[in-house]
Length: 193
Figure 1 (cartoon, rainbow, N blue to C red):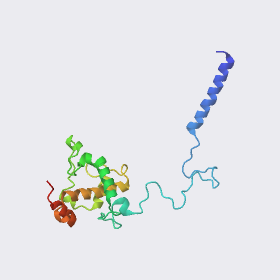
Figure 2: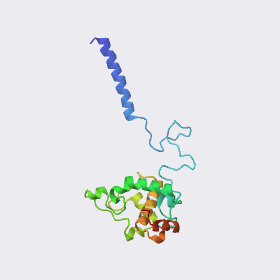
Figure 3: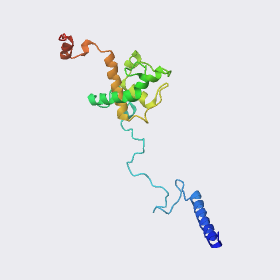
């Protein structure tokens, strides 16, 4: 290699390495350090007025915590339950919860059949008497061997699952007196032969 090319490469390498040194040391500022970047000489800006930090929106205690404003576990849903809410709840339950709790809620999901600890039945006295906010809280924060699903399941879907669990419980403990008169009449009719 001739001398001019070697000198040029050496110069380029020196410039490149000195630039990397600046990157390593950087001009990073710590909070509250003085800076000439902003007019007020501060290194950081305050958040805009009335802004809400990520994960800090909890104005509706019922919706976001499953609790009433007084801190007690909610006994009601934050909105009216309809077919679309129950359909979404069933879809989410089947996709996420049924692996452990089973499609019927008795706690015999596929991973339980493979040796994982069995969760309590959704149809036991303790859970049929539990307020609906209990299910939301358990889905959000976990309980026992169940880990929290707050980072995986949206708030609205946690409520939809809770509503579906109530419907699932009701379906297993319904009686004839729970049916509307016209539906009961249809069931009591003899089927055509």
